[in-house]
Length: 179
Image (tube, helix red, strand yellow):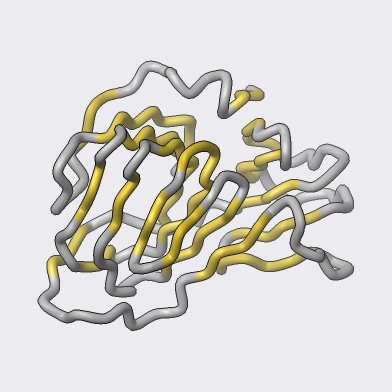
């Protein structure tokens, strides 16, 4: 199954209120742990807290602010489990491919400052070393096809297509092995 993440942004899904946020987002499950999330214009989560699982995402459209970091289209984000988040917003709306490394349980917090190593990587322009660029404990950016021992979630950059496969297509791809 090959899905164009931008053309299929209106996939059937359901509205979901992210804990601590002001407006519901639209969720569409792709399979495994993969989800498309459409943040409406004006979406914000002023509540501070953290997830008990790590979150990985690729911003496909719009602009997303998380704990003082601005993510733009084509950028990959990694927020480890337990990392404090504050001041999240999508002022003009956004579309993101997201995946959690486990159960996405939100825990409120009264702390003031982020305490973890949030990462932002421009997928189209970052230099990939021989053998690939590890991005999270479960994903890597590759530019050379390699055989996989088992199926993985694969996003082709920059066409932003998603599929679950053990075959890696030619070109730059983000490979995510589900835990």
